[in-house]
Length: 305
Image (cartoon, rainbow, N blue to C red; front, side):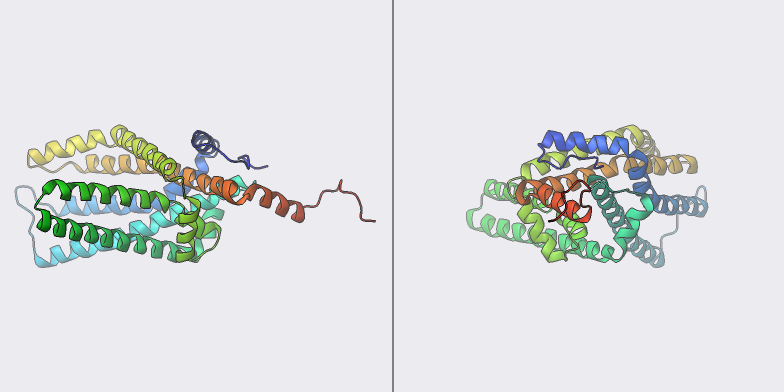
């Protein structure tokens, strides 16, 4: 039996269903989110141990071209690894929500197994988003420079940047269903882009409110699990001393816990919004009912004459 009623939902109902689904399947979603981030936690702690062991008391760390180059390579590899893990986690959560929504059994292993090679499609979507952001920033900066040179008014330039930021935010909300469409419809990057634009038409503000709620929850988790260690880190930096290894490990553990607890909420909400908009705009509930009747014909149906 499906955990979610196949009917149009208001924003409040989407959020209520999101938290209800999260609560009833807490260990499923935490398990999906925790497994990949455990790998990142391992590398963070390993890096902290190696960094602490390489520092000699009373001596500043030696900086060389090789060290700077190694750090640069490490940052690039770390960003790629993070995007890969984030993509896997998001896609697996989407498949888990879909299974629960459609009345199927959802497991951590099964959700990750459904991602498979589709992770390459997600990485392509991430790349396209980065390119779009860079082009948008370049276009706004170019227009601001031209208008600033023509008018000489900083006010007009400021207004242009504000309007550009609003337009970028609206576009970001319109693309909220890009990955759910790519995964659940097995569509290519460009097709799923068009699907997200189509489904979210007229609903950008509701999606923005979902993102805003997730933003508030994320910062609340940071305040609870990370703020004490961040304060210690700032104090240590002001006093020109390094944090003890134990504090560094606890800081990484706080980050891990906050990511695991808050991470699934936004993906669950956008996945439910994907189905909600399909029900509203494409009568997905009727389509799903007809498909299930064809797959499982009722034994009470009258025999053909």
